[in-house]
Image 1 (cartoon, rainbow, N blue to C red):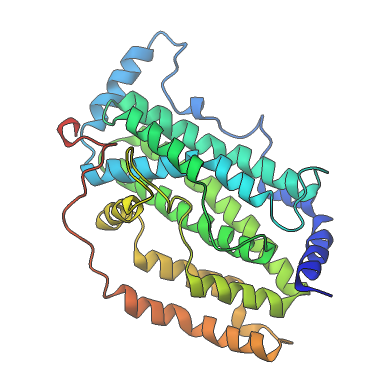
Image 2: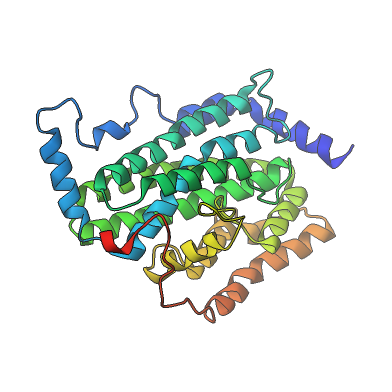
Length: 328
């Protein structure tokens, strides 16, 4: 049997549990928070006073903070790209609307709220160039992304396990910084988003745990493959208006590293957490090739930590069209 057919068989085997995954890791629409719960109420008599207060508090937030918040927002708003990618994964059938496609649609529905809330906050803040942000978001959706997983569900679930934890770290740090600068409402918004990301991380990492139980060697090789090629962020094709696909993502990453929102050390920590979570050291019954992959994975975080220690982040902020220094 081909690797592709085995992947499909495993996905069909796990699909029997998708409804329980939905119940355990996702929240019904009527019960989950919505962006309007945390934003000024446009129907209320105090709307303009609330917006004025939001804008006053926003004045105290520094340049790199705004760049990071904008980059996070654009990343969240490119959800249509991520859903369309995942719908192509082996075992996920949106035509027949199988259990896995139900999961992807409902996961996307939860994630979509994040960009909605942050976009409205940015718009009301008066501190950013919304038209430039909107053009960057449209470019990102137009350009799509390539995360190096192909249609392989094993690789895709490693990616989402890693990525959901990375976005938790980023949103949680932004929440902490917003609170430090006195913006308690923005802090609460980012805290709520971070909570969703952690819950989704638990889901995708559980999918990988289940695959390890039935196909350990191939899952180990997929994990090694993704760690070798490195996890690229969903917005790695980020570009500003008038640019071709460029270095904008690196410059955004520099801003995030400079203020400690998401750093090379965080990347290494996430890798170690996945190695620990999936108990890579305890895996048995592996093929020789998978044993070598396991040895590689066990040593990788320490090696990557040494490399991350040598990374030098530019001290000067790149000036983005999204955020005009005169407004900050």
